[in-house]
Amino acid sequence: ACEGTGSFASAVITFTATRSAELVSIQAKVGDESYDFTNARFGVGIDGPIVVTGRSQTMVVIEMMVHNGVGAEIAIHNIQNPMTPGQSTWAVTTYVKGPVPGAAVTTTLMPLVTCTEIGGICGSFPSPEARRDEGLNLPGPVVLGYIRVDQNSFIEPIYYGVSN
Image 1 (cartoon, rainbow, N blue to C red):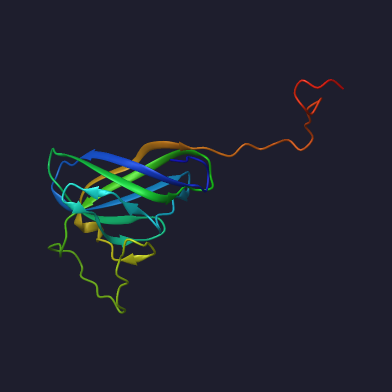
Image 2 (cartoon, rainbow, N blue to C red; image 1 turned 90 degrees about the vertical axis):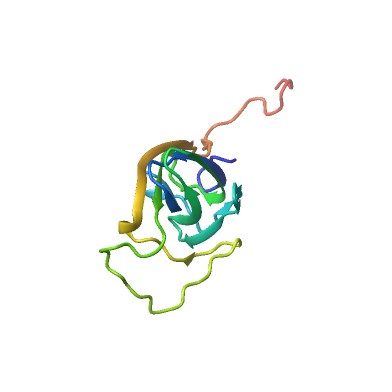
């Protein structure tokens, strides 16, 4: 996986839930600039293909059963690194599906775009009241900046082993 600013990368996220849940969201950033999850794709999970239920530029939500004390692993591909170099931080949150007792219920005025493997902004996102576990500001890989060449530099002689 390439780790340069603006390049596309893959990541494997491992965690152990402390409470059972059916949905997992993933977010990442460097400083205040988020990774781009618009075209995120996933490997096959233990129970078969991983289904994306919501995808935005800054976040992706997938269906994945997680259980108390049982390790989980998610392979995510085709995420775009931010243009800011530096230490990345990640957020992994688990949610329950369906209505949450006592939480406000909202309606959607327009039909949702169904999520597909191709990518693009789609689906819906769970309400904050549906959260089960949450890990915020988890350290991830460093996003590297590209090498800048000083335009005033030169090599003499320009060919190796050739005298002036």
